[in-house]
Length: 222
Image (cartoon, rainbow, N blue to C red; front, top):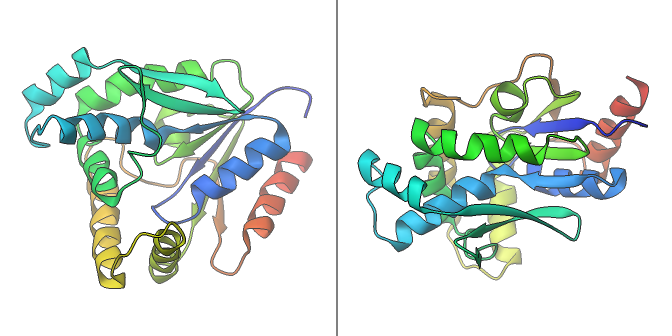
């Protein structure tokens, strides 16, 4: 591709979006934008400040007083909160669930929407999340929706935790995944859905390499 495009990858938790997006960004020499990290960053601070995730006025104050900054480091956008690199601290399941919760509020989405669009203003970006192709970049050059069966997504997330040395019960991962799916799909504001014009990829029986190859070949021939 001569022109640097905007590529969006949406899908439910555990579908492999982050892994696929990182590899795609490397292969295409694009920037990887982990939009979920932005919501996790605000959720992390809310939990740190012991702010109720139901307290909209408090969350509004949090948004206005928090500096969320994206920095391009080693080919990807990393998120900083008030000058702090929070990359490792926002990857817990507690923060993940909190992020899903606060993402239902307009004040939170409005704060992060412009930040995401600015990051993709010049193209050359792989934007991964749950409303990338439907809300943030509706005019994206290429849209993909990565999916997998629930049990497969639970298995992958459980395996991911074990790989990081995190001891967690399978039933706990299952419970959190079910709750996350419900929050993402039933929220009134920007619910998880297949973006208009998106290519749906079922990754159940595909390897990571197989998914990447399928996406790249589609981009190449379009």
